[in-house]
Image 1 (tube, rainbow, N blue to C red):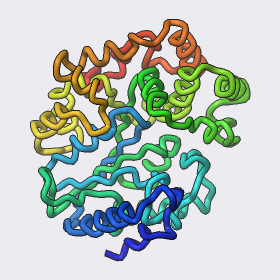
Image 2: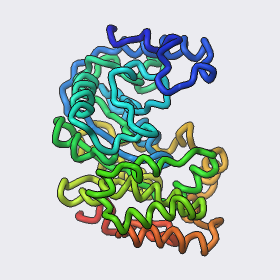
Image 3: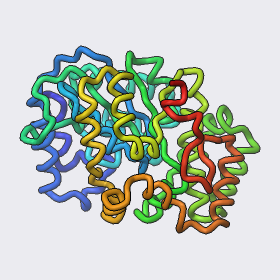
Length: 344
């Protein structure tokens, strides 16, 4: 239990401002961290890393995989905007986005994940031992990463892991972020000269900066989506990367559960399927009602209904500039070629 529980106490907030953290919050995190050490790690299978972006259904996928026997999760171990027991040991990139690594940052990240994936350190893992699906003995870790899409190839090279990439249509993602009134993070990419030189080029980088400073809110957050997804999508073929779409996850839950079970050797697809049917805590009440009353396909189809066509045209301009074809801005469904069942 030596993984720095004291880092949740006052004076070790990481990026959290102390005035936003009550003593009760700090104590709660300490208790959760301590309880997270009750399970016994006997890791036998390769960890599964989920790379994704915010508002893409990642909580649902993580909890679905957590239903499997002898499985524990690691929830956003690189999220520096939450209280973090290892904050002082990690690199602190702009806006919390890990885009490129110096040699020193790579060494620190390698050390950190070697201990997390090896089970020596516990980070936001299961702790509520009285809830369903809790495993006392753990054989496998499932890790959700929201802030390191640009480092996907680095993780594959450095660690013996399985990797899947979860993606959702950019316009509903952008609209959801706007509703949440969250700040944008595109500047973490656009101010990184190495990223711009290697992955964008001068012309595309200039276009992206112009959109970020003068575009409409929808267009700006679709740009953010493109910056976050461009590297994983380009690596799809060379890494034989599994790309799971949110749309397929919620409209073909039984088939996706079966595919995940076979692809990653999980024993109980029925438990995954039942968990998919339960909306995650981050799903809006209105969306949950639509899922129950009219089915998930209706939710997907309605996701673009309230977006003006002029805004969809601006979003498509961004997708065209980045050469991204998995989605069209005015169509709710991904390109069939990206289906996990397309090769069957």
